[in-house]
Length: 416
Image (tube, rainbow, N blue to C red; front, side, top):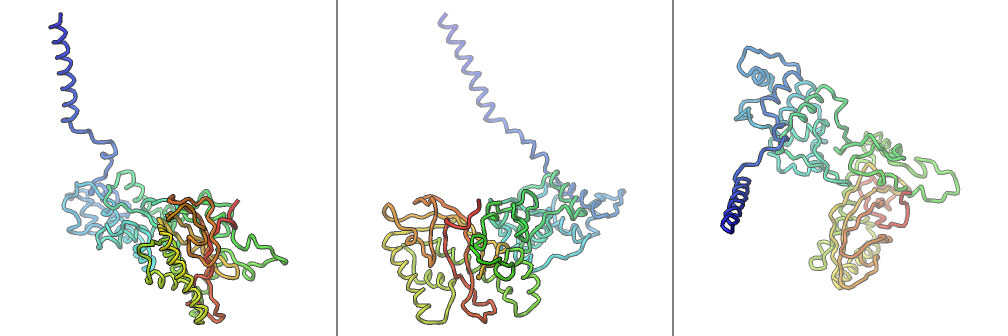
């Protein structure tokens, strides 16, 4: 009886081991998504009729021959037309097809902005193919994937494979130009659905910014006036400012020629204020931060601001303060006016320091008020704020505009 039981257990053990080794040695079956990858030649077969090329069906590889003749495919592009098509190679062919149909009409300045700011992984794409990627992005044919809310660039993922489903969608957009994604003048994806309730106050609404970003009140909306304020005289909304800028850019003396510089000063100001380390803070940091604030060219006034920064640096070292940001997004389309110009910003950061508690007005450098509701040591914090830029020079041409009001305050002009 005992012998039979032992034999039975031995057989069971052998079966279990066989099953385990079988699972280990048998290759995993490919997922169904892999079978949906489109081959290079099959993508060419979609492009050729989409641009209206004639095909000699009696020829060898007739679609490839037609594409080569039209310049949509060029000799040496591919070694194996039966290989799976990557997104970056799809873009090169797609852009040529689009230019065959519509010509090369993309604004060079927009391409420069897209390459510099809007495609987060552009450096992973070969230099010779970056223009094609930027052009297809600019045309709204392929705009990549979101990097998250408040992030002003998108991931292209050029070495992912193009699926048959996606290939058919983008090829259809060659003729259906109205179905393409809409982009802002600075190359960001525009949202046209689920808009904020005050959408008319803005020239457009961006995909990467939630409604709460737009519905936060403007400073002029919380002011108390003893008269009926007039737009264009007492204040101006972002859409009003955008229209005014577009009209005045034709004038050589317009201050709006410098708005990109204003945005850069706001970005730099926050970059230095929200990236502080007591171990490395030095005069270079001081000078870089000081350059973002308005220069009065009055020695005593300018020295006062510099001395305030120096005093803060000493406080940082004494209290071992470290501030690190993970996102600083300054959105130029949300530029409005209330005496001075304001830019809306999103920031995300965390702060650490020696001890248990420090006053926020001492913890951060600011010439205005600091009031972060719910800020906790060593935990990420984010918020939306309006930063003021301006000049004390009544005859300014706009070139000397700089940060004038740097308050970071959760107390006022938030949404409902």
